[in-house]
Length: 265
Length: 167
Image (cartoon, rainbow over all chains, first blue to last red; front, side, top):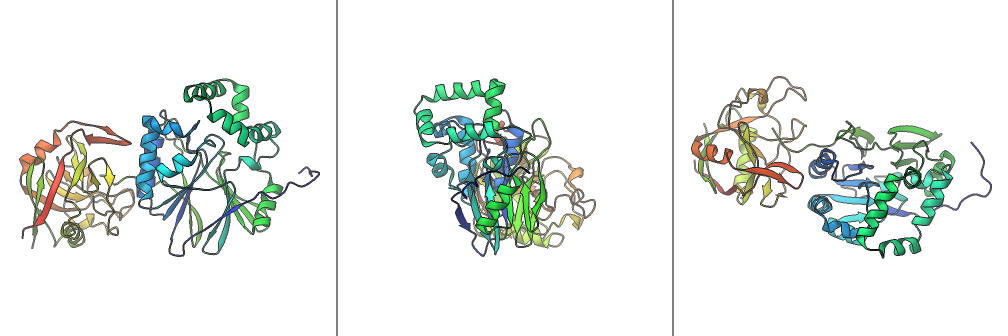
């Protein structure tokens, strides 16, 4: 592992304390919901309705693309928001943005009934301290992506982009997805992974022993250093693929489960 | 011993006998929802011709209602998913039924208990429609479509206006 000169400061983090009576918390990410993913979207909606968990934490890239909260006025996004608002009356929903939906904002939180989580967030659940992140900020080896990320996450870029008409923003987004260079910039290198040293530094600095992240689409749980572990979330694709998985945290620790289905015969 | 309930719907009235001997848990559970008025104002939200009518969980507009705790699956009680029988809907977890039920509109043998496994548990029958079969037939034929992320939702709401125990 290359040694970096000059250590990055630890990012500011937010702490989410779990009420003692909660029994389970679900983590999902990288669903990339859009109109072209009807089965994936239906499975997500069913899970929000039927999971036995007290809270569902969505750790980024819930949406394939979010170019501003005015998207809520379109039928597909409106249906997603209604689904979340409905589920939020039965359980808590928490939302962290990813690299695809980082322009999600207060109107979405309000109308969908979401608790917005900054990246990173430290979860304190029954004495277990777990660091939550989408994961892209930790892929340090991907220098072009980190430069792109720093630019688009700046307040000035955000304000400038959101000031453009929605139609123009959608066109820019479509262009980005068609050009492989910009697309590669937008998503980061698909081979990139979380920097182990930086991740352990974050966990150590925040008093966490475990990290939950998505972004890489390479689900699994691995040790990062003695006493430090990470749990990588699966992406979801039930339209072209057969992937959908929920990471569940209880007092007994983490387990991976299938999404909860609707009540049926 | 059986219990009888009357279910008034926007398509007409059903009389349903509940078998509290073969299915005591499902019957008591259903009657608890009846007594609480839970079903009044709900809809048949999933209707599939030649299969079943499902309801008891949503208000018009696909607004889900809160429920009591899930119950044990009694599908191994010998009752079969025959035409016009009443059974509990559930998720992929065999013991997850709460308020939603369905009425079989044909003989659905594939829904019967086979073994105590996730695939084999089947769906617990606990009653049958004894009057108003024509109402079931009418509801079965309503036009359905997609609403939000739900399929097979009646285009015009089929309301359950009131359910009461009558004996």
